[in-house]
Image (cartoon, rainbow, N blue to C red):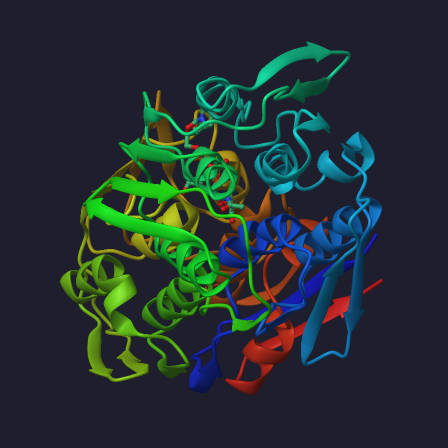
Length: 417
Ligand code: EPZ
């Protein structure tokens, strides 16, 4: 089992280039199933979830050539429509192939994603909305058996709750539906805008008609395209927090600061000095970190995917802070591990109360999910001595070259088997 050894305390200094966005790449890769034309995708982060999605597409019949710089995808006409549990169970975004398969072939058998450390991860909103496009489905032995005998028919759909995945699945499905579809109460994460941008470049007819409302007109012909996915705002936010935590001085390049303005404003409030440039962010962490109360919410609110990382920073604040997790029902798995490093965090329902003025102590640690594992690295960077983080396969799902990037800015970190 691979582990990470981290020697703290570190003061990060230097430049980090942000990789492509995992959460933009996954829906865009799923959406390539709509097309029979050649598609080339650049700037995909080489992380486990992307590899798994590529395997899933190949299992559905996609011909994929990888020349390391970009992926060239060609879909044969006779693609399969069965997405196996073995592939979907480790990467919940596998459910995103349901929409395109139904749109193109009128049928699909896709494994339910199943739960994970942060929650049950249901897909009821996806399924209810798809049924409004004429899809009939049954759940049999952990699989969604779905079909649309008359093809997908456009409809007006209002999501009962903001859901990133459901919004993505329905936008993709509606691209080939007959007639017009209006989706309201959509999630509007930048990754969804990137997916829409990709689909429009592929020849789909999509228009945002209000902040959370999008209108899609089904089309028959799609075009070849070359596309480069957007940078990863959660990776960028993670490294910004690392600089704030270690009184570091980092230049984060390859990302438009506008898409993480909420996070930047919060880091300014807790005392970091931040300068914004066209495609880069300069951050100087401060000695004195001010406490703050935060709640996670759908974009443009504070992202749940930075909650664990922010919690580590607030352990170093001058006074007590609170974080409310409003998106997932069980996203405090990192708290027990942080408390083993000397943090004093108590949980009451979905609210965490974080004592300030903590000196992290190095320890042997266990990662539980993707973002929790990176929060343990942050704490280990702030702790004096050697920490060891186990089960780092969680980390490899979503952070490209994290040791290389951190080593380059002064961290003493190495992977051991
Ligand atoms: C996406 O997950 C991201 N994953 C998550 O990032 C991110 O945390 C989440 O959006 C919220 O921003 C990808 O983009 C691949 P949701 P998703 O549907 O689509 C409930 C990471 O670390 N819900 O917006 O699954 C759900 O249980 C990952 O990169 C239903 O009840 O999130 C959750 O409580 C973790 N029924 C809430 O809605 C449904 O049908 C938001 O989920 C769907 C969701």
